[in-house]
Image (cartoon, rainbow, N blue to C red; front, side, top):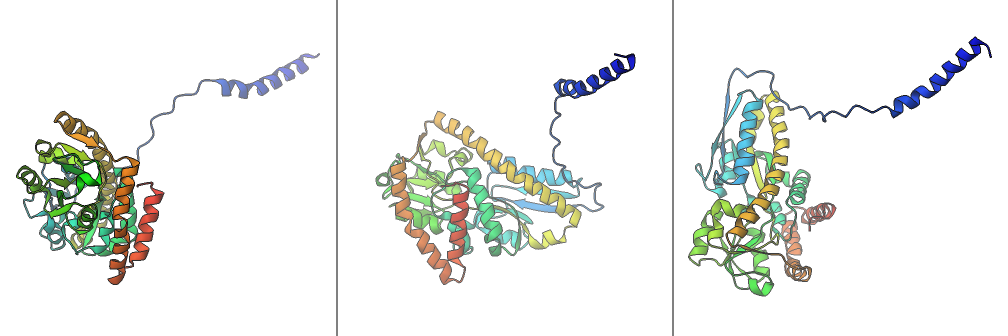
Length: 357
């Protein structure tokens, strides 16, 4: 074989082998995923916009510390100080039932409110008060889907900043393991279809705000109460109640809202920044409730609180007891011209898709 042929053959062999060598060579480790860009202002606005943010929750409540306070600080930081948010907690500006009107009238530009405290005011939202609900994240996602599809129509005076819904449990002096245990117990409620659900289960509802639960349990005004157990430590309820039935008795809507005129008056670049914070805040609620469920359970158990979970057969009994409320709600809404049949159909489909209950 000539030198030329040998050289040609060697070159061909190298070209054939090169891809093999390259594919077998160790690859450089992938770098960290690039985080999604955070929308911020390029520079501070010439004039600072001041907003009052009001909530009836205590400053120690995890939703205040880990979500509302953080929202306020992030808005200020991302607008380079262009928006300054001042927090007012523990009902400093008004009672929990007054917060929607406070915001819609501009007494506070931003506020935390629960429609369940304003009986009859937001009828479509009461569908979420009919039991039963499980996982917080799945429940909150379901609420957001229903709000974006239908419920937004009930809140024309405000811009919804954030919406979530922790399923409510039953706290009590005596253990509640069955419907028979629950029968006749004077039970704190927020009103609406939560009250109807308690009546269907045999309890005696007593309407009161969360701030009155401690003294009411202590003095025997009520025997039990509806509240998600991760909120107990903020009100020291483990001192007066030693039992919790984790049942998801209701899914009350929690909303952070902004006065619609205030929102519309904000420059588009600031609106864009706030929308970015709003999106992040939904993840904060998921994280804080997941963490607080674990922390609260540990704290409550150390304080002598017993946790009870309904067996499937017993839970079926509870579901059957409240089942007629779905038809009652649908009929009531249709009677008011509020498309109850369609809303119920939409909500049931959302719950099924998200595997909530």
